[in-house]
Amino acid sequence: MPNARDLPALPDFRSPTVLLAHARRTMDFYHPRCIDPSGGMYHFFKDDGTVYDAHQRHLVSSTRFVFTYAMAYRHFGDPAHLEGLRHALRFLREAHRDTAQEGYHWLLDCRADRREVLDGTRHAYGHAFVLLAYAHAVMAGLDEARPWLAETFELMERRFWDAAAGLYADEASADWSALSPYRGQNANMHACEALLAAFDATGERRYLERAHQLAYNITQRQAQRCGGLIWEHYDTQWQPDWQYNIDNPAHLFRPWGYQPGHLTEWAKLLLQLQARGDALEADLSWALPTAEHLFRVAMDKGWDRAQGGLHYSLAPDLSVCDADKYFWVQAESAAAAALLAVRTRGDAAFYWDWYQRLWAYSWTHFVDHAHGAWYRILDRENRKLSDEKSPAGKVDYHTMGACYDIVRAMGAAAHA
Image 1 (spheres, rainbow, N blue to C red):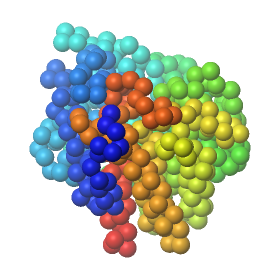
Image 2 (image 1 turned 30 degrees about the horizontal axis):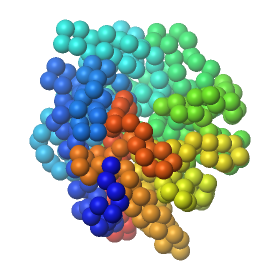
Image 3 (image 1 turned 60 degrees about the horizontal axis):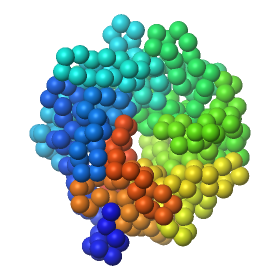
Image 4 (image 1 turned 60 degrees about the vertical axis):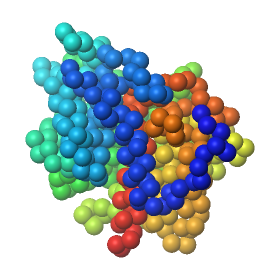
């Protein structure tokens, strides 16, 4: 990883040209090396792009590749990205989807002569990304995904929806016979994101109404049970479970603690929901102040004042309990800062200052200027913990997505 003094001068991170160029360079790390001619994409990459596991296929990576290819095609118009999108979409539909039991397998082993289900557990988190993938495929012009989008939403409603709580449950067995007692906010957060995309793709208000319900119930009702912030884990009655994964705080999808990155990611989603408020015809007066509160707490309690960057996790008393820095936390926080800056008036300078600080830190420490894309995780002193740039689930969906979100927000503000 280069020393900061060896890097070129910082670019203008408020320039759409700069942001889109960075998104494209990040995409270039994956395309075309990620395409497996026998089906789907490779999911595991070292820093230099070497594939270190050619066989495992994780539902989260498979769906996020649909997103990254769809967005690249929409922004850059490269026919190769459209072909990559078709390739990724076909694998999601034909390999991950269980035509017998319905739903989508979590983890596959794929070889030239066979495909094996390694984990058939049904995760609401994974199905939220299936919904997101189909929505973005539709927006990229693949209209065959439109009925699949509706099919996925209806499946989630039938299998995961907890009507009493107004939120999605988290996990079911492969045959749907058993529903886990665990409840989590993360699946609902990404379901909210996917539902906003489904609304954009179809114009159907039901998706926006469900996104609004999720956002309100997590960031208002559930937050009231957790000191005004968003705890990750709950029991069947949606009461906070303060002990869940306390011994496994770095769990990939269910980390213990308050997550500064999820506080800022919710801030971004609340502003994106509010931007669609005219179609919703609902009171969203709570959205902006909640977004500001979540963002400010994340920066105040999560920012490393000595080394820069946002730490990963905060304990219930808001002390740092996991000091490592993750790529997605910085990227989502930069996006939230930009959306807050263009949405607020008197405090815009405050948010632009944080935006610049987050980008400068990320550009210096996380962006791989030699090979492309972002490193995944650094320690407190900003040292890499491994040479695995993109294990299951990463594929730089967060970093490219942040660039696209920022460009869209600035474009909307320019035409307001």
